[in-house]
Image (cartoon, rainbow, N blue to C red; front, side, top):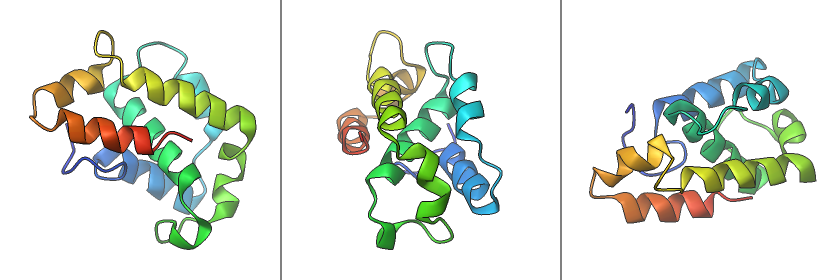
Length: 120
């Protein structure tokens, strides 16, 4: 797990997402299609959580190089509902690989709080 803390951007997958948003290569519709299978793998889950956090972040507090323009397609009511559903799926102990990884760290409750804060 390329993760260094419990925050939504504190992992390799979220950093990749931010880089794709900055350079304009992130395609939300393609990403949604790639996440059609359940459960989400760890990287998909980390990206979904990061996207939820971005939707909740005020424009003046977005990560450097990310603007509201890049997030326009993610901020629709339909996209927010899709993100909410996918983020909730990461919190299912019986089926979520990312949840299973956090169970072994001793920081599960802190991670769960961080994920819940990312819900759009």
